[in-house]
Length: 223
Image 1 (spheres, rainbow, N blue to C red):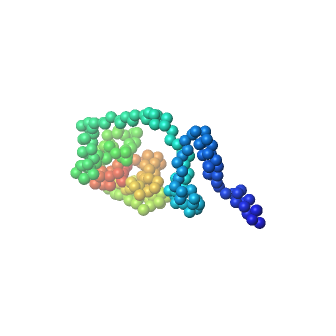
Image 2: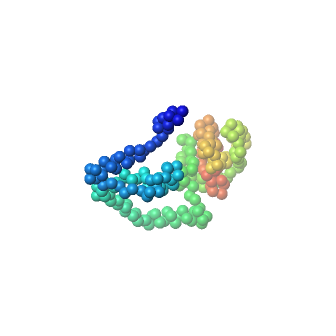
Image 3: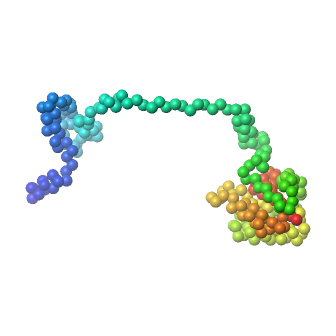
């Protein structure tokens, strides 16, 4: 039984330094350098009783420094040249700071969210006049809180009612979709409806002024 147990231990034991003594004696006989022995406390104690530092010291006995690596030149890293800010950069930063502090109004046509559409039967100047508030808003529809199908039904009902009442300028509040994980869904759908199915009833639509909802609303000019 003991013999079988010993055979199992020999088969499954991990003994990385089993031949270390023989290798050191051969190297000494050949005139090679023999690594300094670890402290007697490290040699005599079992691995299970050693600390991490002692195990590391024992494992590194055969390690030698490769002196050639000291001569490998390291590539010189060149820092990119510093870019000096131009007067236009400083002016843009100053404008952004004033906008953030509320000291300068945002020029909405300069933003990516600005919307402008004009029926091909009319000239483009009418969109600028519409955005500037030269047409009085006669009624308003707010789509906040509606899902897409509900919003489409409300837009159709609102447009039909506005045309029946012969209104000229209306406003539709669609929001900016800032809290939506899918972006401004209602805004994109509204633009698609107005420039598609209902375009025969519309002269132009454009982003509202800041005081009227700004990037979250559209002025719509009806025929």
